[in-house]
Image 1: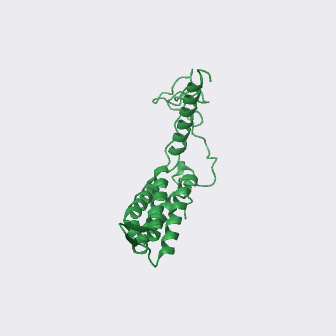
Image 2 (image 1 turned 120 degrees about the vertical axis):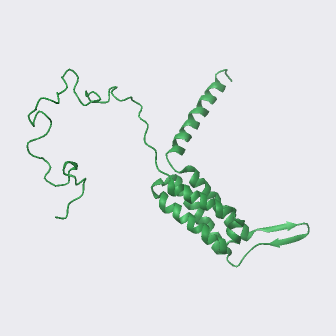
Length: 195
């Protein structure tokens, strides 16, 4: 074993940790975790037997199959939040509804533990929004255009506001090229007008 092995393992661990952090940040990770964890107490308690000394307390209910279905659905919704993030609103609302249904069906929603986890996870899933991608380049550093921040090409003079400019030089075409009637210049903003 060489002396470089711990550093290589540490570097690989750091790289994997950063990859997981990037994966986790691009999806509603915590919402999926809470929703998936909510399914376990909901499906466990109706089938569990509690031992108190020599006394066995069976908590199974007549709706044990319903509890199992609700618990499995919550686990599936939690996993789908991780791998299919575009269904986050549907999965969040479904998790909240399943948590509410688990109150009468599954021993008060898995003794309120599963109920609360599904409500919190569902609310987090509905409210999650993808973040803006971070730009690695600063504006103006080889961004593919030669324009300065003010929209003026380097080496040209900025137009004076007091001198009248011909429409073609001022950047306003003589005739509009957009014949659809939906350009932002005419206030339609991508919508067709009704009349």
